[in-house]
Amino acid sequence: MPFITEPWLNRLKALGGGVGLTGWRYLAGTPEQNGPPFRMILNNGIHAGMSSDGMQIAPMNPWLHMYYAATGVNARGRLINGGQQITRQEALRLYTADNGWFLREEHQIGTIEPGKLADLVVLSDDYFAVTDEKLKRIRSVLTVLGGRIAHDAGI
Image 1: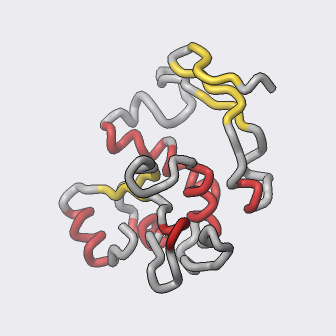
Image 2: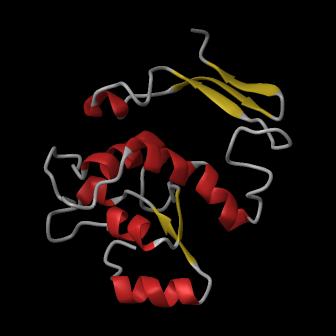
């Protein structure tokens, strides 16, 4: 969705669709070849979620995607997506609660509440408090899936 326009978003929304967002422009984008228009998409109200198509064109590291969405800055340190930045809270929601809609499992996953699956991660740093640059280096130190430890960094 790097170059989607508001009229196309409205057409897609009218059809009951949603948009999957990645931050792959972080790697090779320029001010002329930027996107996606995160702010415009969120303001539109269409269903949206963030993910990675990792093996194909984008880094699998979600923190790079979140950094790009929140700052609009590419890997070269250049602002390329100005005016389209979203908050860290919005980016986190796109990766968690909002993705449930695409799987038709929004009542089972994505938020912490009674009756939902409770997979979780413990992060190396406070996502909401670190500097923008440190955001790119956050890592999971403990991951629990289905009640079992799937990753333990031993920290």
